[in-house]
Image (tube, rainbow, N blue to C red; front, side, top):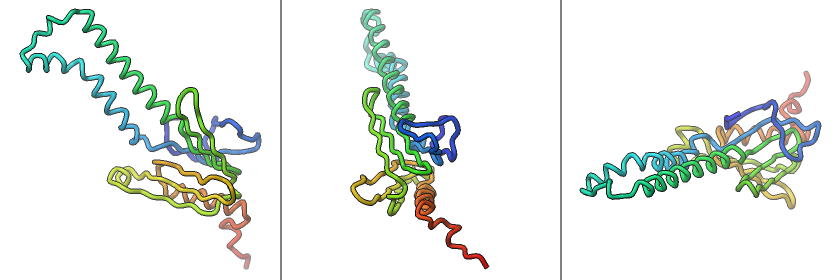
Length: 190
């Protein structure tokens, strides 16, 4: 449920899926990419614990601040933590990339009120490419996959997905199956 790479997921569907269309691959951004919102949320969570130390260091008396201000500060602080955490999780969880037997689906979740869904038929896939750049990408093995489509279809990009080279190869293999040029087609009977 909370994984970033799932082959043949069960109990999973998406808006616009045909009845006979099976999901072959479900992708999300690698979980390590969540650090960009987890670290600020944790630091903001810890702020109330360090405020007394800062006041003490600056030789200020914390008891001069009215109790209601302290309570309002805590409420605002923890609401911000909740908002950052909730929004970060929703963006990670609902931004998904799906490979089916027929299509590539890129679901971009921008907010509770706006999402964008790009669909490209596998028969229109001309080429795939993948890239990994940076220390974190190399250590945790994630990167981007770029899918070039034919005609007026928009190119589709999968950002920060696990195993990008494998994903690019997987998509190209599925496109070749549709063209009738799958791996089995290259083997000639003796």
